[in-house]
Image (cartoon, rainbow, N blue to C red; front, side, top):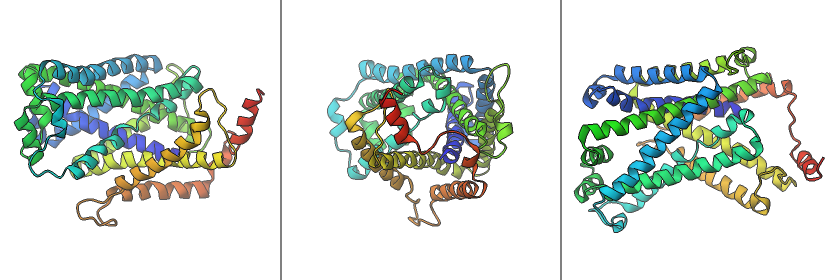
Length: 392
């Protein structure tokens, strides 16, 4: 599972850096048409963002924490604040607009497509667990952070999306439904934020949030790589497991979490069509890894295991476990859907990506058998839980 999660984090770093490139270029004063016509500018912006995040991460955990707080504040202001601003000062529609009809749109398909946004939004919470070793009272604080990640993300997205829809001119919504307008958010920002100055202010806030996001992902990926390298469970474990004497961060693991995304950015530069499949694979990979844990915990529950840590769901645990597995399998089935041709074997880049990661990982697992090198406890969930309940 660690193999798949590590790859997924690195691919996600690439996706975030790529999508941030357009925002970064606009803040620097590069016109959107110039940016679109010159892919080299996009590559430079993405790589520049990755280098900036690497330098900040190499400064140590305290610097990372400060910048992450600034990024979180910027994201809340940029997302929640903007949504509320649009709702209060630029509202043009009634709430009934959410149930209005626009032409001959297929609302069944539109609803399903909109619901899939959740698959891409609610999957970054595991990064909290990747840095658990650096958290005081992690058994209590990490679950709280995971819940807050999901709640804050959901509330901020709802506020933002509602603000955009209720502040949009009715004709704009009709144009979006018909396909005449493919950039509704940009259109609303230019109309409601005071032209170029207002849009630039919002984009600066967005860039700060992107920087914070890349920083956090790099940190999570490097900690995950280091933790398994420390137990000699990865190739080049000795090199990956090194910690800086000055900053106490896994320097070499950070380099991997930065250089590999840069290489992927070059691949996207050569073939821009790979960006969407790479992004989809990043999400798909983590869902598969998650469900490995969910399935394993459900099997252990049926064998008698009951979590005994400071944070558990009590009797609702098995219900949530079953629902989580069902949801995860549903999400995987949707993310595995092929492209426009409908051919599972020739037009499914996500499936190809999973096979490309899974096959080498399984070969390494069964041939090198790295799990034999670790002295960490395993297969002891029931025993540990019983001891904790007994107060031993």
